[in-house]
Length: 119
Length: 137
Image 1: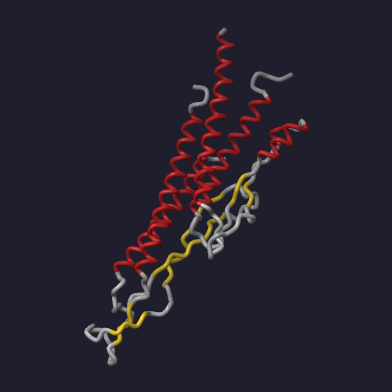
Image 2: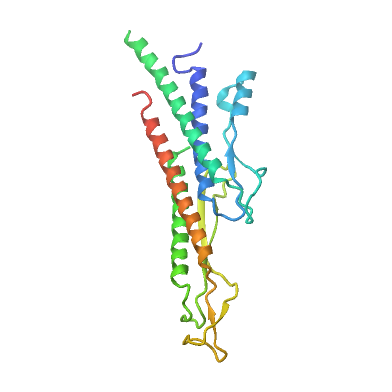
């Protein structure tokens, strides 16, 4: 029923990687616009949607990864820009670490397959 | 979803901050310039930026920041009493440029930090892409 490459764990990992790439892009955009008047920071929230899909048994590939505008964070500056440098930098660091963790997980999965094939 | 898009976004940020830095240097250099080709003293220059968006409804591409224009600051000049200045009028007053050195220094620090942050973002993107190449090796 489940092929060697049709693993659900692999699909979840793939979604995680896609989301991390999108998140890095969104954080880069926030940092590039750190001095743009009136700019509202954007973020990627996909963990809840992914958890729902996993719990309800839906196909994980249907979870879409979108950037949403964050209008709830208080704009601490007169020009209405609500980008906080510290937050963006720490988000970026966390994102990079999570990305590497999932990459290693995927690598190990393929290593295991290779070992099994080699016998 | 491509990594290259992230790098373009960061590079647009770098360009904007570098232009801002150039304008700050220009303002500081001309802080005491009382005569220009147009007549009056030097007018402070500022940078106008806005977010660069694709009119893409799917919101799948962000493209950073774009420089709209280099604007002149129209706040009034300061009048300084200095009869020894060759540009002083009959009452001994000189119109000095509307450049505040302290403000320019603060802006310079902001631009410099933003530039560094964009560099870090670009480096992080690059290292993520390089790690992806190593899957399965």
